[in-house]
Length: 381
Image (cartoon, rainbow, N blue to C red; front, side, top):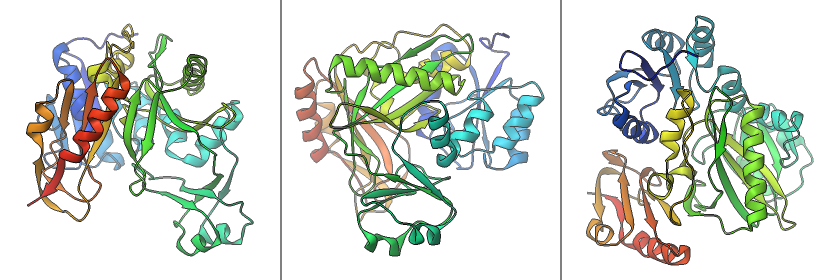
């Protein structure tokens, strides 16, 4: 394979949000030539890359024009124009993750069908064309409605606890899956390069915000048995191989009361469930993603120290120019690491940053981060 490690090779990234910012930070020590495309002026990663292009990564021609200047393309968000990526791949550009895998993952219905056809166990589901079909169906409550496309960061998901919830269904093509009796929600970041080398990070344990429906709290390592942790890593590596995908793949899973693991969803990019790896692991998910897409040897994913991560979300009822409270408390806390994403405007539940606490004792890290969560706020003037 052609080497992409050199200043004459251009790595293009579709998206320049907070994940792109952390990816660009990981790329800086290697002096990679990084071009990034994002529709937002002043996007979080816009000042960290070699070249920033403001444009819509959902627009076919914009992606084609951007890709023409790049030798290799990757993503930091799934909602990109796959048709353009297919044409660029046909023209000889290297695309990671590959468009055929991305097309499946973009559609949660196709994703569930892919799991089923490859023997990757997930919860039972049914596909529907619209909300009227869901209303006409006989459902087993509780269940979960998910829009097939465009769902992101908790959006596009609705829990149906009874028939009363049918009055407020999400519109458009969707799937409804049986609710799983969940003991623990876990995630594994798997990594694969074009040479076929595969590694994975240790499983992490996740708690979700009850209103925003996105990861609020993450503990590494997950408080599960070593045998279950190994099963989760094997499942994640089997999944990334099934997709024939290069880069990182975040594999979210449920553990049920019987100790069985069910696949929930996957994301073919750096992921919220791997933020802790920046400080807590020998190599971060961002460096691993770069290694994988550049087809370099994969790094050591070992956990150096237990860690807990929380998302910093915009305060409820607060919108406008962001003001951070409690910075001194965080900076005075040993083992605390603050990451702010550079979003100048806050709004309720918007991801404004994350906070990681590392400590030799996981329970101490949990107590520390829970205290800091009460002190550090993303509010508005």
